[in-house]
Amino acid sequence: MMLSVTPTGKQEEVLALPAKGHIVVLGTAGSGKTTIALMRAQHLAHLPSTNQVLLVTFNRALVEYMRGISNSRSEKLVVENYHLFARGYLHSMGEMPRRNGILNKDGKKYYIERAVEVLKKQNPSESTLQRSQAFFVDEITYIEQFGLVDSTLYYDAERIGRRSANIKKKNRKWIFEVYKKYIELRKQAGWKYDWDDVAFYVYCALQKDKRERRYTHIIVDEGQDFSPMMIKSLIEAIADGGSFTFFGDVAQQIYGSRLSWRDSGIHVDNKIWRFDMNYRNPAAIMDFAKDITKSVYWRKNSDMIEAAAHIAEGPKPVLVKFTCEQHEIDWVIDRVISMGKTSSTVIVCRSRADIDLFRCLLNNNSCDATEIDKKTPGYANIKTVYLTTFHAAKGLEFDNVFIPFLSDDKFPSPEAMGNGVSEEDVYEDEIKLLYVAATRSKYGLYMSYSGTLSPLFPKDAGSYDFQDEADVI
Image (cartoon, rainbow, N blue to C red):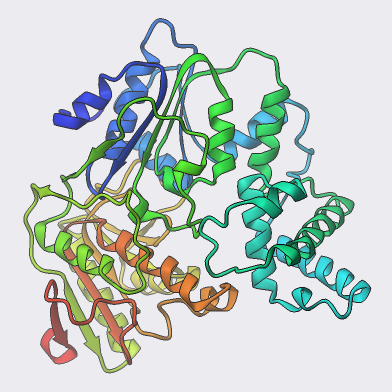
C-alpha cells in the first residue's frame, strides 16, 4: 500500500480498471493524479501476470518526488523520467554512443543556424530562409516531436498547434531542406540525436525489435508535457496484452509543446476519466487559478478540467507591490525564514540566477534552504524552506508558496521572449507557469513585484488581496 490515502469515487474506479488497453485520466491541479498513478502502478506490479511496470514522467525532480512518497516498492516497479528510459533502451540496442550522443539545446540552435546559412548561400533569393533562428528551431522541433521525417508527411501534416508558424505549402520544402541539412551537420559532428528527436529513434527501434517487451504495463504521469513521439514510443514498448495509462492536465502544459494526447496514438475504447475534485488547494487559491485561465493569453482547450469542489480552506492569495526590488527581496527572505520554521515554504523562481540569489541570502541568514531538483530526496513535506523553478515545481505541493519578481521586465522572462517565435506563443507558455506555481499551495500564496506588474497577472480579479509595501514592512 502507498501513502496514508484512501482513494474515493473516480479515483477508486480508475484503480480498479482492467489491466489492459489504453486508459486516459484527465484531472485538475490537486486532484491526486500523481498519487493514483503511483497506486495503480503498485497494484499492477503485484499482479501475477505482470513482468515489470514502468511509471514515467517528464522531469527528474518529479521522479524523486514519486519515489519519496511511495511507502513500499515492488521490485517489478520502475520509476524514471522519459529520457532515462529512452537512453537505456537505445543502449540495450547498441544504438547509444559511448559519450551521450544527444545534442543539447544550445548545440541544436548552433547547427540549425549553420544549416540555414548553408542554404542561404545556395539560394540567396529565397525569402523563407530569411526567417528567424527561433522560427527554424521551433519548426524543426515540431517535425521531430511528430516524427514527420518524411517530406511528404511534413508537407501534408495538419498544423496542429502551429497558428504562429504559418507557412504556405509551397514554402515548406525549404523548411524541410533546413531540417535535412541540420541532421547532416549534426551527425558529421558526432551527434546522433537531440533531446526532441530521440523519441522518434526509440519508436523506430522498437518497431524493429522482436525481443520480448520488458514492460507489461506503462503509466505516464504529467503526460501533457510529452510529445506525440514520446507517447507513441512508450505504447510501442508495452508487451502484448498489457496496458497504457495516461494521467494529465492540459492546464499545466508548461514545456511549450501545445500538443494534444489525442495526436499521440492513444486509442481509448471506453470513456475518458476526469478528476474534478481538488484535494490540495483552498477555495481562495482555486478562484485565483480560475482567474488566471480567464486571461486573453490563456489558450482554451476542451480537455481542461476545472475543479468542481474542494476540501481545503485557507486565506486569499496576496499580491504585494514594492518600491524597489531590494525591498521585495528583503521581505521575501524575512517571511520565508519565519514560515519555514513551522511549515513547508517554497520560493518559486523563474531562473537559475534567482535561485542562486535567494540561496545566498538565506544562507547569510543561517537558513539552509533545500533546492528541488533531480537529486532532492523524498518530497517537499518537511517543515523547512525550499527553492525551485516553475518547471521543477510541477506535481509538488507546499504549505506556503512565494512567487517573487512578477514585474513586466521579468515575467515573462527576457530569455523566453528572445527565444520565442512570437509574443503570443511566449505569453501562452509563460502564463501556464503562473498557474502551476499558484496551484502548488496547500494554504498560503504570496506574490510580489516592483515596478510595473506583469501583463500575465489577472490584475482586475477579486480573488486576491493587494497590498503596498507600507502594509507589510
